[in-house]
Image (cartoon, rainbow, N blue to C red; front, side, top):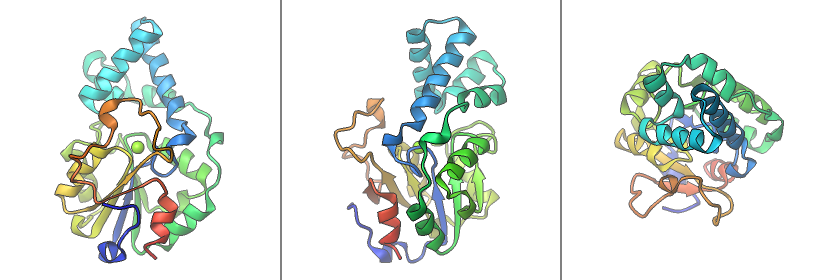
Length: 231
Ligand SMILES: [Mg+2]
């Protein structure tokens, strides 16, 4: 495991699969923090809970079900489209156009996908703000996943089948180590995006990478630099 890729490890790759949040833009931009706050407000209003209690429940659902949304659907029968609309009512202006990243993605040989636990609209808004949306062939979102989020194996299967991805000729980029477990078992190359600041406090301890993460081929805090090293 190292920061700079061995080009030969990727010469067979035909499909490039990217998570969105904290992967195609860096962790320190903190766009997800806005979504996080909106989700807390949603839970607080829905169940008439204090902010602290709403946040605790939100995080429990996230941990137990992969997304807060899935927990709310199971336990409170909420309308997912209403939730997604409200969660993603954020200011995308904090994302600046990233021309070097766009050029690096464009130069990759093969298809490029966004595979997100968010919505298509969110992916489109974020990727357009970054100026990279037009480089992608498609977005697979939580609606396409029938609200079953990564890291569920069934959701990866759904994505791979829909786009006829040969996983032995594909790579996945992700910021959450647990979302790379299934890709690795499917024979994909796996790249973990880490925060630029190594001392960065993760929101949840279980999101941290551990020495047990044998399913991670590479880790980098510089996606553009990593992709450029493959050309
Ligand atoms: Mg992410």
